[in-house]
Image 1 (cartoon, rainbow, N blue to C red):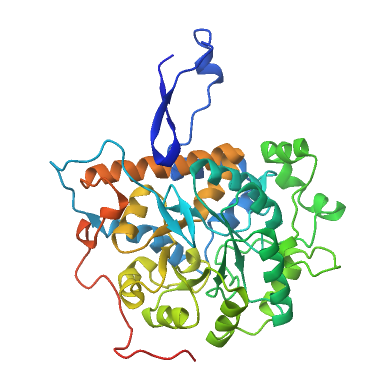
Image 2: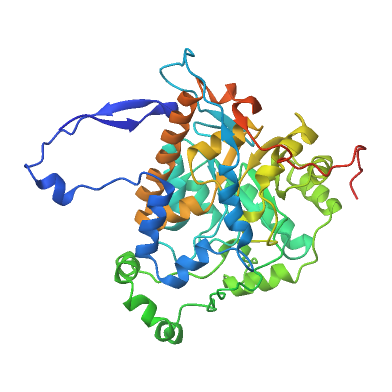
Length: 427
C-alpha cells in the first residue's frame, strides 16, 4: 500500500505506511473515504440527520438572506497569485489566541451540538487537540464545560448575558475553577426570529410523549437513532452550563427564557465582567469599528468580528466588509478574530490577510460531527489545514504571518467604515 500523508506536529506533514497489507479488493469494500471539504461534510450530515435537526443547523433568521450572503461574499474578495517566490517546504500556520498557542489559525466556535451526535462536544474538543487548536464552548451546549476542558486544556467558555450579576459571577467562578483559558462574551444575538421556512419545535425534554411525537423522525433516520442507542442514552436537551447551584439542569427552553428575560447588557456591564474575570476576554458579535473601540475601552482583549453566522439580524452585511475598519480602529490594542461564512481554508487566508488573527468555525464542525463524530471533525479541520497550505503556495507565502491586504482584491467601495472620526467614550 502506498504511503499516505498524515498531519504531524505544528501543521507539518509526515508519511505513514500501513503495517498490515489488506487483501486485494478489500480496500474498496471496507476503506473509509476521508472528508475532503466542508461541502462534503455537509452532504454527509444531511444524509445522516433528521430533517428537523439538519434544518436547525443550516438555518438563519427570517428570510435567511444574511447566512447566504456570508458565504457568497467570500467570492467577491479575490486573490492576487504570486509565482517565482522562494516558498518554504513547510508552511507556517501557528499563531496564538487569548494567550493560547495554536498550530492552526482555525478555532472551534462556541455552538451547542444539540441532538447531533452522542459524542457531542467532548469529541469536538479531542479533535481540536489532534489539530493543535483551541475550542470555544457554548453555554447552550448539552455538555458540561468541565468535561470539554478536561478533554482540551485550550478551552474558552462562552457567556451570554443571562441572569442577574450574582448568577453570572457564580458561573464565571465555576468556569475559572474548571480551567477556562478565556471568556467569549457574545453580545449580538436577539434570539431566534421566525423563519420563513418554519422554526423547529424544541421539546422541554426527551420523555415518552416526546418519543412518540418524534418517532417518525427516528424511523426515517435509523443511523442517527442507532448512534444514540449504542451510546446508551437519548439526545440530551439540557443546558448544564446554565445550571444554578443545587438546582436541576435546565432545559434548552428554560435557558432561553432566562436569557431573553435578562436586560440587554451595556458597555458598563462589559467592563464589570472584564474586571471580575481579570483574564483574556473576547467580545463577539462586533461589526462597527466604533463598537470595537468601545469593547476594548471596556476591557476586551479580543474582538470577534461576526454577525452570528446569520442567526441574528437578517439582511446584515457580511462581517467581511467590516473587518479592515475594525482592524484599523483597534490597532494593536486587541486581537481580532472572524467568523460567519467561513467554509474553506481559502476563506481563512482572506480574513488573515485582512488583519484577523484567527478564524472561528461553527457550522463546519457541526457537519463533521454529524457525518462521523470525532473522526469527522478531525477530517474537517485537516481539510482546512490542507486548503490553507495550498492557498499559501498559490500566493507565494511561506507563513500566514506574511499575508497582507495586498494579497486580496476587492471591488471599489466594498469595505465599509461608519466609525466617526473622534474617539467615543464607553457609555
